[in-house]
Image 1 (tube, rainbow, N blue to C red):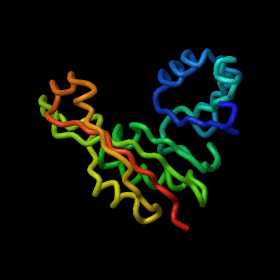
Image 2: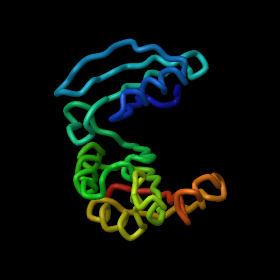
Image 3: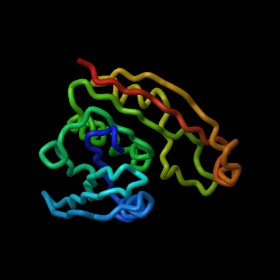
Amino acid sequence: LSFVRKVTGIEGVKMAAEQFTTEVGGTVVSSSQVSGLEIMEIQASEAFNKGVVRYVLGDFFAVTPAVAGKFEVCFDRASLVAIDPTLRRQYVQVITELMGPQARILLSSIEHDPFKDGTLGPPFSIKEDDVMELFSESWDVKFLERQDVLKLDPKMAERCTYFEEAVYLLTRKS
């Protein structure tokens, strides 16, 4: 964490932030409430260069630049696929508002057929065409790679017949 000026995690599940704190041997150095969101600052251990991570905990759709600031880099791993597909446009609107004028997003998404129990998610599948359509107004979208998760985790075959992770680089349009 020493080469990064500031790291902010936006998380809807407090337990995930607490697990992260444990994993980095961190301690909570401050906690406050702002606009109904909890803001936690976590000091990581020496093994993680004593970096400070700020967590914004609560409803992602309530996060604004006034609360969290603007960002130049974002790693979206399993956020877009975790929310109900009817909320995707709203998600894109919020993430776009939080990002600066030259921002980039590394987006990790999932594609799969309906699960054998009849459910669609979470994680909810999102096809490449849908990613392009959702983000193309404000972002240049570049497909980077696709990986067959079933080869890495054969237990997933109990849930569906295909399960792939797709990664995209989104660059803010000027």
